[in-house]
Length: 291
Ligand code: DGL
Image (cartoon, rainbow, N blue to C red; front, side, top):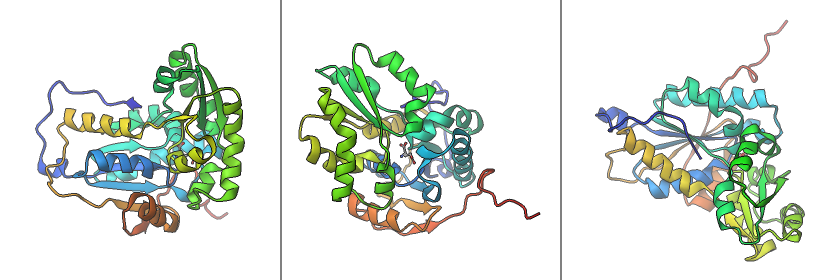
């Protein structure tokens, strides 16, 4: 995970309005809910605003410029609504756009990236599988991670074609999904992998499906708990912790109809909440002026 805001030496004094402001959490779609789940567990008193850009998911099949455009637009939208910190809960958006978002948004910022380092630390067979989007796997940032942390491990990197689309329609265990997932995992298992990095925040919702295929042969590396801890450290360092003593239900927004989001939040997170539709314009999605 990445930290991009300079830390002050001691937490500044903050007005209550600042500490009670929400934390923005954003993903191309529903995957960031796996990060939101970890954040809620670690920081139950923090108000959270979640934006799913489901109308434009999957980002993993978009060009780089489109991903940067959407990430900036949603980051700016959240800042305009008073977000005190931003979690880019999407490996693909982080890989493509975190440097620019860091330059333009003046709030603590946390991105996510595949857990190459923890996987290299725990693998016994020294063979590790990585499931992530094609965009993440071909990014310079991911290549730099491998260069830095792969050590003597062999990393088998598999684009998870079709998996984001399945989660977006709340399919986490159909026979078709299991067959697709098995086709992604089998080459890793055949090569002797004992560790699997989930390099896309949609994939933690497939953990039971992964277990049904691989049993206990693959140790799953999911960084969402570590992301929540980093967020906590950032809030503490900036004096931004909420003073509320009661748990707060997150506010959910979607650029699509939000029905899958409502269902997944209810079934996998136990959160019954309305999902508000939102239109967030950006350069690449603005309707062209008629000639
Ligand atoms: N959850 C996003 C990620 O972590 C999925 C990207 C996509 O929409 O393809 O990469």
